Image 1 (cartoon, rainbow, N blue to C red):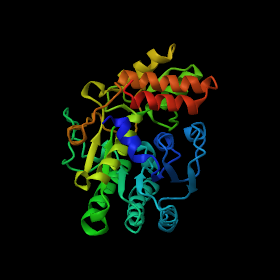
Image 2: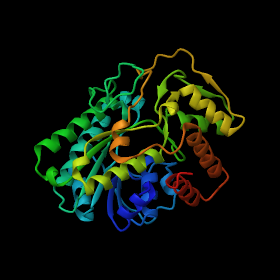
Image 3: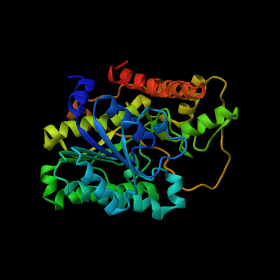
Length: 353
């Protein structure tokens, strides 16, 4: 059965609770679920300016404003909705911001995980749950081969480390509480994502778009860094596939890397040059010597476990991912119908086009 048919057959009519639903990745998640006929309840802080949630035609999503760091608010929202599937995506997701506000980062990323796992284990309707973390959970030794799921979790900076802690919290809950004998629970460690609608500060593709829109050169702070870049639809659809598969067979629940093929794990300067080529008229320059907080130089993922368990493979190359991303922003700048365009990109992806 194709990825599209597997996901559609499972989620049509399902009740799905998504934390962080009005952010960049959350908006794409909600768009897919709504298009597949799911009933979606999202839980997030107020929608930030520029979020694609507002332009993707997501009025059917029931949105609850709240803080995942607040145990009672989150528990009440889950209990009231009584979901079958829970996808936990809420996070403080930026490395540089985590240096500026480590307390908020740990509160959101660690206690947010504790709170959602508490809410899930006390909700009898849940049949599958996925906790989204990051490729940065591993102790980074700057090695050339990809990290595997059994390697040491010890992220360097507050963001990466808080996500390592989220992984450990999830593992402890699975060992400690009998409710997680009946509720399959997994974590997903996804590589760097790109795609239309991302407006985050200090993230490379949004920085490219902002500079190009102003007609200025793109300032690239770490041009030689290597990352597992992928279109946002790759991990989002992988999360949905995993939640569906483990609901049918709880034995497959576990921790999984989600990333691109080796040839799409590229340097930042390669990514930026692809953007410039697709945008037309954009250019970039390397940032001069500035004293910035530590960021890893090389990060690769080995995704054999997910591929072998579920017969999954990435759909879009890095070239196609950048092309689709640029097309999304260009259409938005021209006042295009972003709900329809986003739906078209989702359909193309699911159909392998």
